[in-house]
Image 1 (tube, rainbow, N blue to C red):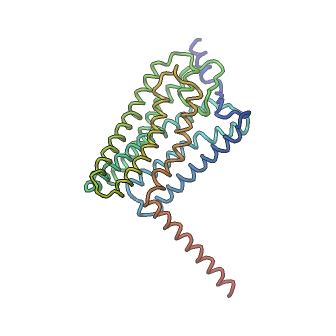
Image 2: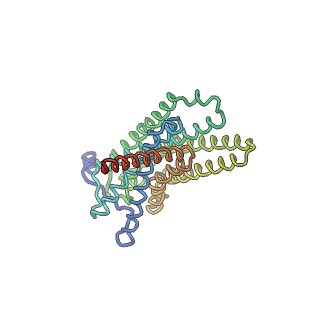
Length: 328
């Protein structure tokens, strides 16, 4: 009977998402800001994917990996923000048990895969700068595809384990999640049972998906900077330092927020902190990634100019034809 009651508590009722925005305190202004950031993130990443696909000069391992990062960002932010916005606009705060499970499952896939793909991208830059002669061998197209697929697979395996465990927990009380999406630390507070063992599992995942990748990223950029320091050109050094510093700034925001959220005991979590940290890796980072990783890059800017140039030429040709037809 007790087990049956726990199952009913777990599966029988919807969750309530208390949300990020308070309608009484500039809620509409914040919603407009967040939706604007969402649109910038989606359009920026979509445009980057299309640009990489169109321009043959960008058909390299670096941009192949970058296109996967952009896809992950689009899917990640779209998994969260539309539901949050629709709840605010409609005034409804509920999310079904199945809906919460799907959102949590997709969330873990995208963040896990993104943590790994950023690591692979740093390794790609390390090989390109520190071992340029061996780059075609160490980062061939086949190896790039295997690395990208491994990132997605790692995210799926990690997500399956965590989502299955969390959704099988018995949830009691009001089932009100003090967050704007179904994030695990906020959900654990609603459980009727001790979750300390699961928190230990989260720490293990944190080591695999956060600490080890972060160490590899820092080691890669450390070697890159060491190599660049031996270059006599001051202009090349300034460019390398500027690129590395911007990349590391995004890495610090992204990994730092995750480490602070997922590698702290449940008792140290506060809803306000968790929401602010979640904004950085669900909204801010997907918006910044295409800017930091691509649109400050001369190859991407050159490809953009070519595409825009071809578009303008095509438009002018069409206008010329229309005028000729009109005179005829």
